[in-house]
Image (cartoon, rainbow, N blue to C red):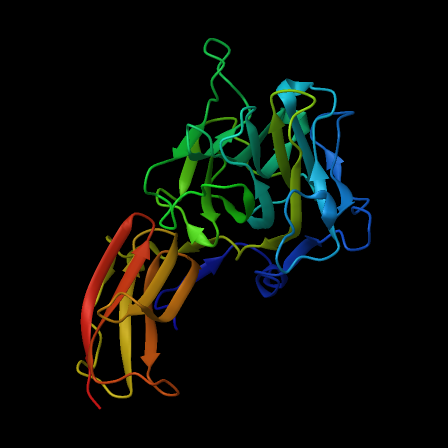
Amino acid sequence: MKKLFTVIVLVLAVQFVNAQTVIFSENFESGTASSTWGTHYKGEETVISKPMSAAPKVLTGGGNYVGLLQDINGSYTGSAVAVNGDVTLKDYSIEADVYCYQNQSLSAYAGLVVYSDSSKKDFYKIRVDFDVSNRINFSGLKSDPATFLPLFSYDFKGTVYAGGYPTTDGWHKIKVEVRTVSATKVSFWCYFDNILLTGSPVSYDKAGAVTAGRFGLYSFQQSATGLATYYDNIVVKSMPPTAIEDENNIPTEFSLEQNFPNPFNPETKISYKLQSPSHVSLKVYDLLGNTVATLVNEYQQAGSYNSNFSINNTQLSSGVYLYTLQAGNFTSTKKMVLIK
């Protein structure tokens, strides 16, 4: 795939080389949590390592240990926030296997934290709340003193999660990608069980917004005897560097072009345009809705792109296939014909 516009990168070349590299990982298999874990709230609890047998259910594919985070003394309204990394970190993703509770009598929220800055008394968090609300919430920490509601909050509800919300307690993969767009704006892409939630990216644009910070884990319970949160396989990766494109080459709209050649055999080119930076998914399906190929699944800058689809080393038969582009809230599907 080739970008068709000029990019002026505003970061050092070495940062570009290290894009998408792992900057932190934790699986607790040493029997102790990394010594670099700290807390957002001074003097509060941080994550500790426990045998896998301590978790309510064994994580399939997990090891012998998991992380546990719990507010023991009931302070800070029952929340515990363990953080790691440097407060100057920007543009990264954090993912983890998280044990999520469903319909518990005492609310137990589990989630992840990005851009934690204790000096500014703020962070952003994704948390699952599978009770009568049945939602995934993304919000900031700071609240309106008049209403006590978060200054920034977004609920992923209803059909935004294609897999259907869980009906039982269990382990789930949660992921957040965060990017600093400007001095006042940050954007977030939220995933649950590897599915990008409809409504992403969520953006917060306000003077005083936290635009850098540490990553971490979030646990909330309504009492000191409430439910602990368990974590495993935590991975943090740097995101590609921010860039400024030549404005004359930036598309004025999102679009998906007809593949060429069409009909095709054995290869065809699919072109598309992005009006703004987005997480992009480009997939090929058969007429039954089965995924044939995933051509693109990544964050991309605004611009024009090509992606090649080849049937080499496949068992695809002649017929009509569909290809779908999803970029932010934009979705488009077109037909293509394979003739052997």
